[in-house]
Length: 392
Image 1 (tube, rainbow, N blue to C red):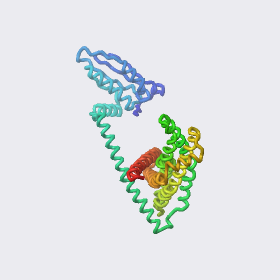
Image 2 (cartoon, helix red, strand yellow):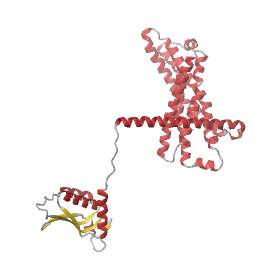
Image 3 (cartoon, rainbow, N blue to C red):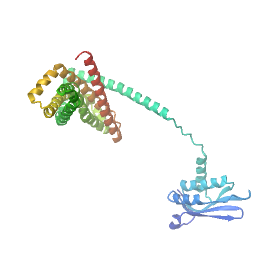
Image 4 (cartoon, rainbow, N blue to C red):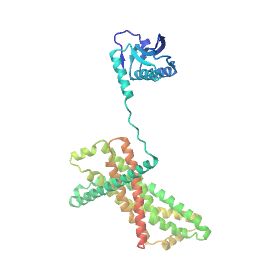
């Protein structure tokens, strides 16, 4: 903001912007007074837009911007003056400035020069191109995730093999801590969810099979679904949302506070300290949780079978023995270690990707949950088709 140093202006006059227009001979004059700054720009803009200057009858008429009465001015005020002068010029009124100090003149000229500069064209692309770019970015991101996850799997495998040569590197305390958090403390929620889903599947199966008089086969459906799909899927999804996100948040917070860099400086390998205990804890905990989920889903189905079919406990267990065998149980259990590795790898990798801001942490926590659930479902589908194909 520029001020006139050579004149004394009362504060009330400085804060009272304004102007008047007068005609002197063949000259239209805009006499500006007070402060032309951004604080008064809104009021000045409204007044200038209401200003109407008649088209000069002859070329002898000229315009003049008398700014000798301006006490202070900034780029906003200079822009308003320049815009008004340009409007007079377009109307055929040649306009000049009067009463400008050197500083005022330089400011007005710079605003004029910037306003006349050629603006770059804004490139706008069509909806089809936007869609193509979105698909291309998504595929590129997916491929990058595949490469990074594969490389990270190699690092974890190498770290795991090092434990056989150097067992002292294994963090026993950290392992049991995460085993407690990811396994023992997840028992209540997983038990409840699987129990409710088993009951709902049984109830809906009875409703759908009743028109065919095949209500007892609802027990077969619940048993096979619980052991092969529902138990492992529900458990893995719950663990991904609960423990996978926690892994990302914990490691990401350490990355934000530069604790991981400090560990490397001290000669502590983050792979041995942060990643391996979490992944191994999930590999141990998830099969146990899956077994519990299977039992609770069958228990929920049994409660609903008693309510809608009138089956007692012994009859229900007999029907379970007829419907399923050990291979159905193993078809679900064999998926658990793979799902555990996926959840652990994705959670830890996304945590190590955090850049250093709260927004980045939230983004990667969300990404970890989504990617882990997506990959678990993909692996489950691949196993389901493969096992069905070989007759298991």
